Image 1 (spheres, helix red, strand yellow):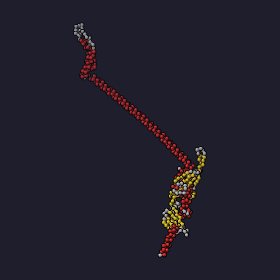
Image 2 (cartoon, one colour; image 1 turned 90 degrees about the vertical axis):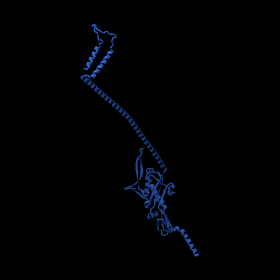
Image 3 (spheres, helix red, strand yellow; image 1 turned 135 degrees about the vertical axis):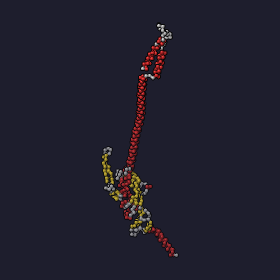
Length: 395
């Protein structure tokens, strides 16, 4: 019984010892991390990059996160906190300064030689974040700022600023060349403008002056973002003035374009009105021409009709004359002769009726013979004359 009790006590003591020293005996590696173990006695270095437990045996374990973010921002809400996540201040080649906010997502190398090299150089993951990642970003941003003016990084070369910074983080610091340009302002004064430009090789690649630690340790950039460039008060004032000037320029251009369009519209409206007036005049002209042509046609038709009527009348008269001549030549027909005698008699009777005779007439001669009453008034002689005239017509 005492032996059993003693065994239980020993087991409990061993369990307590094992529980107490378990963290020194075994270690656990999580997915997304790798651990470097240095043996307690021999000092041998080994790398454990697979998830699970392994024997620690009082060795020293250093844990590294394979992929992570590094923030440099003025707001804790954007990621990171404390001095390790402060904005990075840069100075542009025109003297302007700015605090830059952003982030980078990176991946450490999975090759053992690079992992061992990182461990030897920085000893811990926190040192990698502060003394490697952040320092490389800071140097790249500061060198990029010297390649342009503050105003350019805000407007025309913003994307170029980001691209240059990322490229220098990935490959290394560019070799640069300084250039000077003399220009004359509107007042006739000469100024020297100095600028710094990237030097390129014959293949068109930027010449690297200082190789990036990202190359040495085979660190991969997964994402690089510049979220904000917070300029100093002087640059902000210049940007505000330029923005106002640009807005005024845009408004002036818009007004000029509107005036131009109004002028074009007025011109087109004038052309349209002229076209309408010309069309109206053309209509009047066409109507007048049409009416004149109509009147001319009517006049022509009337003239032709008159000519035709005159010709027809002439033909009729010529026919009547020829007919009369033929009748005269051939002798009157009995009917025509009777008609002429009748008309002659009627004419004579009408003339006799016009003669006023004396109310009392005494007939007779001195010889005692009776007197013809027609001889008394000369009617018989008149009728004889009439017959002679008729006879002459018949001939």
